Amino acid sequence: MDKTKILVVDDSPSMRKGLGVRLRANGYEVLSAEDAVSATATLVKERPDLVILDLGLPAGDGFVVMERLRKNDRLASTPVIVLTGREVAGNRDRAMQAGAAAFFQKPVDDAKLLFAIRKALDMSRGELRFDA
Image (tube, rainbow, N blue to C red; front, side, top):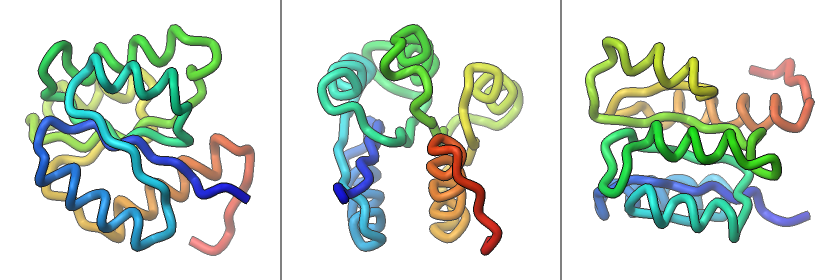
C-alpha cells in the first residue's frame, strides 16, 4: 500500500521543514507548498490524502485554497487541517464552515495534531476507530 500523502502548506520554510520531519517520522509521505498558487497546483497534480494548511499565505490566503479545493469535484472530499498563527476569534468558525476537519493555532502539540490527522483520514475513508 502506498504511503499516505500529506500536503503541508505554509509560507515559513522552518515550519514546512519541522512538520515534514515529524510527519515522515510517523510514516507519512510529505509534500509542501509555500503559497496559495503552488498549493492549488500541488493539490491538482498530486491529489494528497490530507492537507495541513496555514491561513496566512502569499498569493491568496488559506481560505482561497479551501475554496478552490471544495470546488474541484476530484478534490472536494480531501480533509483539511488548519494550522495557523492567526487569532482564533472568527477564523476557527470560518475555517470550520469552509470544511476544515480541525483547527489549531501555532504552536501545536504533536500528539494532538497526529491524532487529528488520523481521525480526519479515518473519517475521509469511512473508517471508524475505537482505539483513540
